[in-house]
Amino acid sequence: MKILMRIVNALIAAAIFPVAVFLKFIFIQIGTNDSAQPILNLVGTEYGGVGVKESLSIFDFIQIARGEHVYSGMFGNSSEPFTWPKAFDPINGRLIAFAVFFAICLLIAIFIIVWSICSSKRLPVIIASVGGLISSIIMIICFNSAASVITSGAISIKSIIGGSGFLSNILLGFVGVDTLMLGGFHSGFIIIFVCLFVWTGAFALIELGDTAEKKK
Image (tube, rainbow, N blue to C red; front, side, top):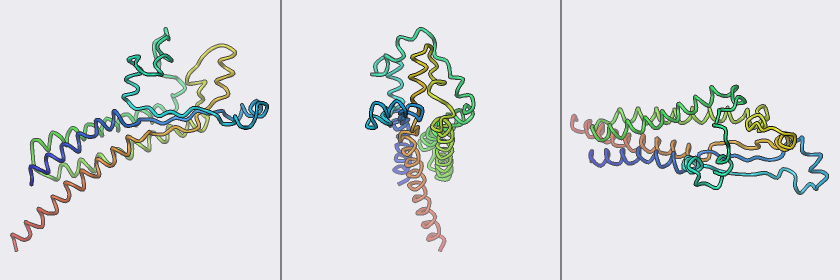
């Protein structure tokens, strides 16, 4: 039974990597803001709020960087190297915290895999599972806090993308980020750590019961 527990623990923990890479990482919805309403009233109210919705995974971002995604063309013709937008300065701390706790979740999963291979002790896995669950929750809070600043309009698409020219300034001034949220991978993280806690905890309770029975 101990071998079975260790194998399942390692498999559950290893599942965090395909979840992180292939599940949707971010969801964004871009639409027209209030400054565009006078123009929308002229062309018709049926066009009000029209925008773009998109969900992207880390795998999608890799494909974009390699020029194999439908959005690759948006960046492939740029002669300037990518620079982190200065508009993100007010939320850089929260974005860094999000990235740090994202990495911590992956490191905890690696620890559980290695520990499950090397040892049958349950307590370290239980503690690591709780740590992973707490890290996932903090990660979500950090991202949502940063996203709320963007969706509030405090950081505009114009300030993020930049762009020059009269037409570019006008067009970027009419759009804003309506929704910005994690795409779903975070739910996978939480499910994985909860499963690890429940699975390992169940074996620990069984062992405690057997020990008490033997002593009796």
